[in-house]
Image 1 (cartoon, helix red, strand yellow):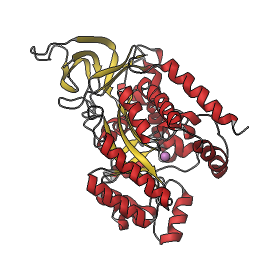
Image 2 (image 1 turned 90 degrees about the vertical axis):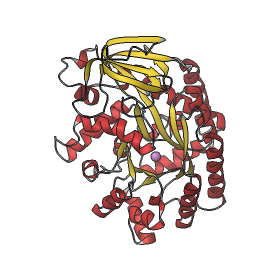
Image 3 (image 1 turned 60 degrees about the vertical axis):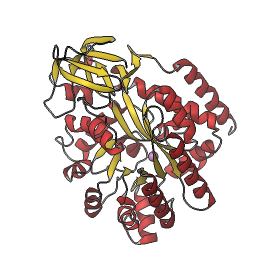
Image 4 (image 1 turned 180 degrees about the vertical axis):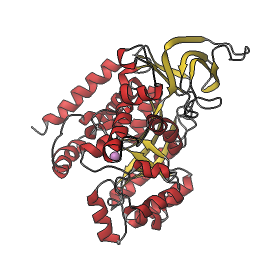
Amino acid sequence: MASILLRGMILPMTGSGDFYPQGEIAIKGDSIFHVGPIGTTPESFISDQVLDLPNDVFMPGLVNTHTHAAMTILRGYADDLPLMRWLNEKIWPFEEKLSDEDIYWGTSLALCEMIMSGTTAMLDMYASMEQVAEAVIQAGTRAVLSRGLIGNGPNGQRALAENIELIKKYHGAGDGRVQVMFGPHAPYTCSGEFLREVSAEADKYGVGIHIHVAETKDEIDIIKEQYGKTPVQWLNELGLFKEQVVAAHCVHLTDEDMTILADKRVSVAHNPESNMKLNSGTARIPEMLDRGITVGLGTDGASSNNNLDLFGEMRTAAFQQKLVVNSTALPAYQVLEMATVNGAKALGLSTGVLAPGYKADIISVNFDQPHFYPRFSIPAHLVYSANGGDVRTTIVNGKILMQDRKLVTLDKDKICSEVETRAKKIAAQFE
Ligand code: NI
């Protein structure tokens, strides 16, 4: 069992004000053994490796609570179009051409980007999820995977069978780093009957549900017309919220919707950049947090963002609320909680804080850079000044995946060139 000692500044995310200007973290195997000021690690701890980084801030790895990782292969392929034209003429036809291998390489590119920008765990929804699982196992990150289910007709049943197969093969794989949920796409793409079936399966297998909810105004109109209710009311009536649910977006909620989500302990994945880029709207995040809803941060897929940098997402999340609510909305520490503690809680992970007993998913941010001086507030710098490129070290499950910005588990150059070739080959079919 390998053990690592980390020394530097530490923001453990155990409560605002908790900070060690000169601290140390002892990692034993896959877990955190000790966190405290320098010199406080029990003498019985013997380290195989020491990372002495006095100008770095160590913090929990970031958790991306909603993405479609393989969509990096579509990054920049189509932008600046009206939503339905963008989907119908560009995104969906391209996605139809994707092979299992394309999805493997697209996901690997996403994982490179995530490791290099401090994201240690993701909640993913896509197709060919066995390829995604293999890419995650190879990369060494943590992931909760869901097969996207469009639930009307035989395709829905086939996808549901694949999701169940994914659970049997990969739930708990990669030393427990890989978990599985069900991924019914949205209330407007799945019938009530199908959603009830998914709910029963989730119950049977003891896994959660990952679903898009109330993303656009159009969705609200469609569901109201079909069922006479809001999407949240409809899903609640179906009994879906008896399960552990992560609801992505939740941009258009009524007060009653928020009460339901709070009562049923449904977690929300907030994706501000995707919501802005697709003109979906602004989610009422401060009100959700006030009601005790667990809200994490997500990037959504790379074609509606277009990067997977959660540092950028934190900054946007804060600025968006300051613009529409007021300048005191979503203070820096609360945004950091969304990207760490809350994200881990939403996904049911034992990560998101630096404390003994938690899994060792840890990053370090290089603070010896002009944009981090003077050091008045570490949380403010992390949210308002930092970007993913400032991450120096990424550790998942006690294993170093990036050191001094060099990837350990993945061949970045090979992955970039594979995706470049594959993406251009698909695009050429539409010229
Ligand atoms: Ni999405």
